[in-house]
Length: 380
Ligand code: SF4
Image 1 (cartoon, rainbow, N blue to C red):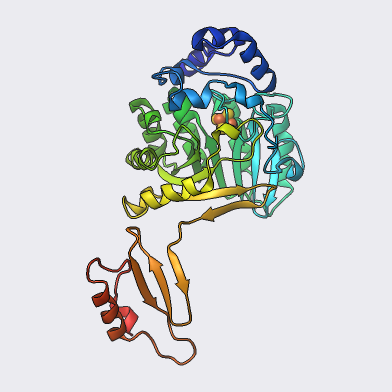
Image 2 (tube, rainbow, N blue to C red; image 1 turned 120 degrees about the vertical axis):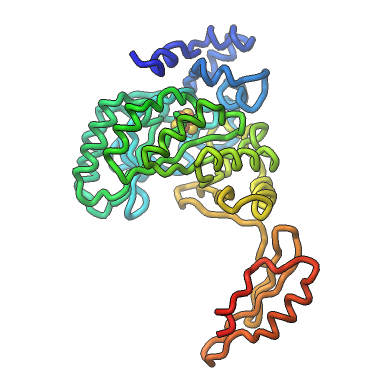
C-alpha cells in the first residue's frame, strides 16, 4: 500500500470519531452524516489551527447543513443533462466524465453533495458506458474527468481510463478536476506524474481556497505536476468565513502563482442545499476582484463567475470598469478609481484617432497615467 493510501485509511469518518475529536454532540454529527458523508484525512486535519478557522470550516460538519433555505440538491441541473450515469453533456464540444465517487476529504459546501461519497451514483462500473457515450459523440473534443476526485482512483484505473480516452480520435483535450494536491498532496507521486504525462495534452484544475493550504508539501506536489508538463489552473470557491476577504484572496492568488498555478476561477458559491451559511453576497466577489486587479500581476487575477442556476453555464462578472460607452468615446474607471477617456475608432470614413486628442487626454490625466498603452500604431 502506498503512503497516500495509508494516510487515507486513518481519516476521521465515523460520527463517534468526529464528535470526540471536535467536541460536537454525537447526535448532531449523526444527523448530519445521514445527509452527507464526512471524511477528514490526517494531513488536512493537521492544517487546522483552531476550532472555526478557515480550514476547519471547510471540512468539519455544521448543524446548519440541515437547514432548508429553499436551496437545491442539484442547483446546476446536471442530472437533466446526464444521458448516462457517468456523463454530464451540456456544452456542444465538451463533457464532464464522473469517474470517482470518493474524495480525500469531503467539503461541506460541495456542489455535488447529492452524489459524492455515494458509490451507487458514481462508480468505476459506469466508466465503460461513459467511454462508449464519448466514442459515439464525435462532437466531444474535450473531456473533463471529475467526480468526486479522479485522483483517488488507483494508478491502474487512471491508466485504463486515460488509455481508452486517448484511443478516441475526436478527444483532443483531457482535463482533470481535482482537490488532491490540496487535500492529500502525498498522492502526487512520481509514478502518477509519469503515468499522466504519457497521455498529453492533459490539463488540470486544482482547488485551493485558502493560502494556508499551500504548504511546502502541496507546493512540491504542484511542482511535480508542472514538471510533468501539465498546465495547472485553480478553481476557488468564495466562502463566507473562509476566504471572503480581499487580503486573504490576494495572498492565495499570489501564492498559487508562486507554485506555478494560474488562478482560473473564483466561483460564487452555488445554491446547494445546506450551504447557505457559506454563501456571500455577490458584491463581495466584485470587491475582491477590484482589490486584486491592478494591485498585483494580471496573471494572478482569476475570473469571478457565477455558475448560473438551472444550467445556464458560467457567467463572468466584473467590477464596473466601463462607466459609459458612446459613439465618440468610452469612459473607463481604472483600478485606483480614476476616470479615463478612450476615443472610439471612426467607422466607415477611413479616419482614425487623432494624436492630438490622445495627447489632450493624457494631459488631462497627468496625475496618473492612462490605463492603456499609447502605441504608434494607433496613429496610422
Ligand atoms: S473535493 Fe470536490 S468533489 Fe470532493 S467534496 Fe470537495 S468539492 Fe466536492
